[in-house]
Image (cartoon, rainbow, N blue to C red; front, side, top):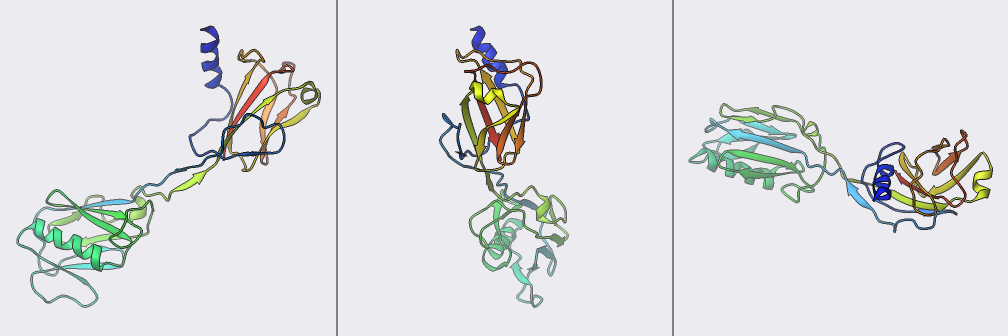
Length: 247
């Protein structure tokens, strides 16, 4: 039981922090027992804007989504170069017509959906009206309509929480320390296929008891982790060193 609590303590310890990203692999010697290579996406936030009707817009009023100006009209006449939205018998019907116009006639990579009877949800998409996708698109929103407004204001959609999805690498190596490794002033226990930006160090004896006190320095050196003699307290021959690194 004491060992279990000690192990938990050492896992929470030590050097610069961690985050849960993907995990591919290691190269070079001294990398036995590492985790099987995998990767995982992170980030990936959809840019989302909301607009709300408080009543019907008036004839010829507009709302703008990037390069597209939508004109609300109660008749067939509308300004050239704009996209017509026919004002329906209620604000909800007008909203329905606008959703259809955005998804069918707009040029920006967004998808429009209706929420309730009066709210437009505008999301970044792979294609016009298509599959929603993580992105931070530069699409400026504006309106000149009496009974319609963007909930977040007339802003650029790239300020609304979007983030393109990406993948970072992560790997773990386990090394049994030897007298030859510990005899010099420095050695590299792990070499990765990526350049680490953060890592954690776990050290235990050959019997599995956490080693909590050592004065040596552990730093990033290119694609490797560098262990440097930097004090009087060192690991012992046979100690098991585990290093977990993130790109």
